[in-house]
Image 1: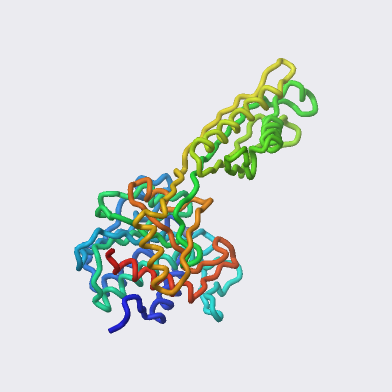
Image 2: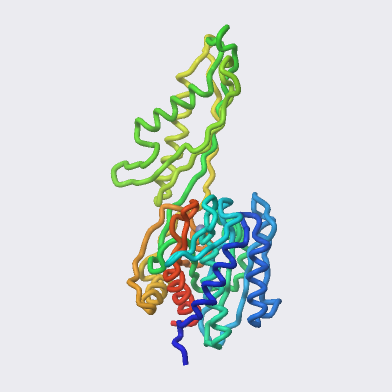
Length: 394
Ligand SMILES: [Zn+2]
């Protein structure tokens, strides 16, 4: 009899090679969802166990399909486990032709990324279940969760129809990174939108009549930078980051620019400090507005809006799902480690929904770039870890 976590490695590599070639940027996940569904049906999963939810109808991005959710009854009595990986990719992956080069799978075309983020994760989840069915392995009740629209704001995990997940006791998410490293916490993030309404005037004839929205924004950003509120933020024991990422303004040099829109973000693991960063941004723009006046003493108007994109989380090392993940890593002969992420993950929303969720990698490297590759042995290790987590019950 084969060991509990032995897998058909060539089948697992074929699977990921095929799925990475399917185009599926965020909102366009129908084809990859169909590919997953086809394989599950062929392996004997009844069609009524395979469903899409309606997350796409709640997502601000719309999208072709909702999340793909598969519910399997257990063959042993144990708490339900959830295995998940997002099925969208960044647009740079569209058109990729995966090719094996030594230890790696890469994109044949140097102008596309690979899409190992996160088709490799989806194939870890899929391989785990296909092996269970093929080898007839005992397993607890399982929910397979394939969220859409991760890359554009974690929308699939955010807007999941919770009742369809079947109340899992713990979740395991696969995304970018090394297979043995468990992400047990991640930062929270605000998006900041600023509109500056200045006053137009002729830049040569009557510049003193205008209020330049660009001048106001420049003063505000200079203020934030000089006072340590832009970029890496370190204030006493508090840590965070912020970034002004997008600015749009102006269409002529002979006009004092009347309007500017700006998008920024503020992150910190500490919700209170994150709010403080947002407050400092608001104050800086208001101060800057007061410092730019026209000849009639008029100032620009600041419209400031901040929205929580996702809340931070931190799982204790004693949390059963952390312990379970680490022992699964050990069971395949890897040295387990834990990590805190400074980016948001679908797991942020799973934890917010009440499902403690650990995130593991599957060998993706240089994600979101044309240099992206998948380290094949790491991916196979992730598949073995996935099978272990899908079959063990303690
Ligand atoms: Zn990802």
